[in-house]
Image 1 (cartoon, rainbow, N blue to C red):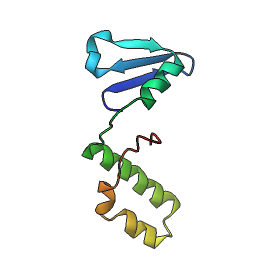
Image 2 (image 1 turned 30 degrees about the horizontal axis):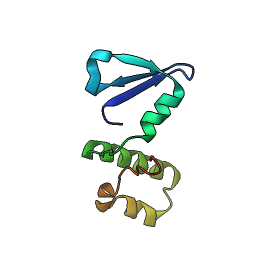
Image 3 (image 1 turned 30 degrees about the vertical axis):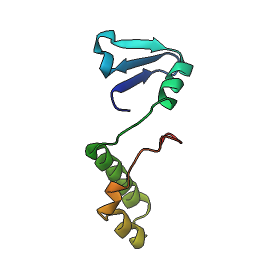
Length: 92
């Protein structure tokens, strides 16, 4: 999530919102964290984030699908990078 960081030990939950830097980390209930995650209007995925996601895909494919040559060729195509987006309806 751009501009927000969450820290938790699965008991307590803290949010740091870069747009409210003076607030520092704020303790929130889990339900409020979920509400913030699901109420996002627009999430833009910058090029660096897309490249990082592609790197994870490539590494996983090399490790687990190295024999699937067709898939290897597909994921290495430059057009795949532009297809990495955030789906706000399903939050992934």
